[in-house]
Amino acid sequence: MSESLPLRRVAARTRLDFWFDAAILVGYTVAYSYGFTGVVIHEWLGIALGIALLLHITLHWDWVVRTTGRLLRPRGPDKLIWLVNLALLFAMTLCVASGILISRVALPELRISLPLDDPFWDRAHTLTAEVTLGLVPVHVALRWRWIAGVGRRLLTRRPR
Amino acid sequence: MRFLRQLAAATAVVALVVLIGLAWHHFAPGTFGGQGGTGPHRFVVRGQPAAAVHRGVKVLPGVELNTGGTSGVLPIQLGDLLEPVNLAVLWNTAWIEAAVIAGVVIVDAGRRKLRRTRRAR
Image 1: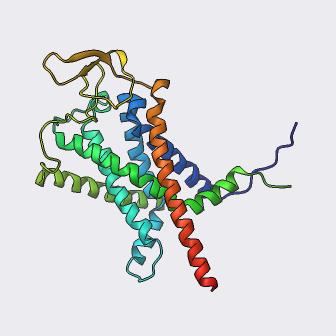
Image 2 (image 1 turned 60 degrees about the vertical axis):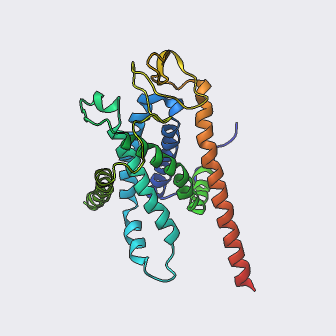
Image 3 (image 1 turned 90 degrees about the vertical axis):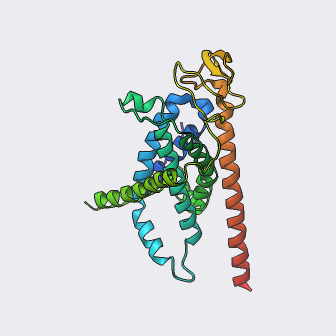
């Protein structure tokens, strides 16, 4: 039997960021795959993703404020990431919002009825979903060094 | 307290984006053109007819698929799928994400390497 080595020490906040973001990515991937989930799971998962998105922004609010403040500096870092994140904020928020507006299962379950039968929201949902599919992986990949570093520390054992 | 303040700020930003979406709908409802939602993402409700489903998706027995004609309702039922046969849809999404991530990582790593080489000269 092999002796198990202790996991490396990683700050609780870093661990939370890593696993929470990983869960959001997996949840998003499943929710996007409507043909696999079916409508019920798609809608509930979409609502959960909306709440997770709000928490994600809250957890990274310091970064938002700091980076926005540095935008006007000529060589300020993270400009590209800021732009991608802004586009993703719009796309993801409108995707969840339009999804709620066209909901056929989740909202009736919550006894909420929206008298909307407007193709605008159907199409907005489709369009924003497709935009998010392009932007989510870019959002993830632009932080690949942080992900690789924290992932390595979280998943490898500390030598005694 | 700090968390609540940040949550309130994030909620305000999200609400602002939703308001922009509602304003978009109000001032330019014809942005996407045409009438009726007959695209492939017009989704189905339990017991209601579906306009269409993704290509390659298996349609379970008992669900109705509305093909658009007056009598074009096929006997198929979409509810909770999670059918192993439809895993291809999930893999397809994961594949697209993985390809974009790989592309961005390769470009970013190449750019950093180039910058390091230039600095070293």
